[in-house]
Image (cartoon, rainbow, N blue to C red; front, top):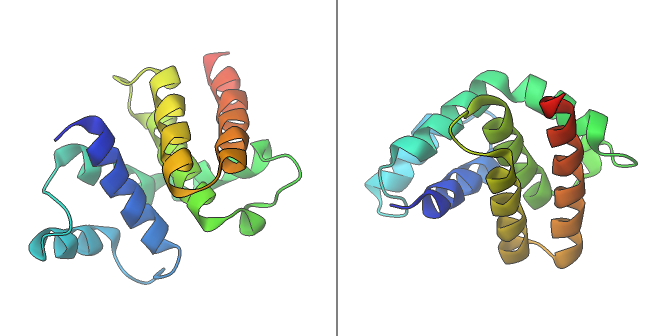
Length: 133
């Protein structure tokens, strides 16, 4: 499975977590695999696990850089994409930051709106600048 598809699987789990906060994401992923919705994939599982462990820090960084939008008011799709991308930027070192941003924008174009994609690009660009310092 290519990284885009693996990322897309992780995004779906992260998005679903917005609505089922008490459900373990690993269990959600395993269930999706067992019923044929997802394919077993180490990258997807890794992203989900890292995000679970670091969501507070990731959300804090998103909130700091989402000018004019408290995290609770962001569209759920955009929030899931931002969480995924910030997780990659902070914790997956073998992926260039620009690739993480581009993939997030592509997911936004597919699952959200062009305006959401632009907003996500801006937030991630700001976060990327602070990481590079």
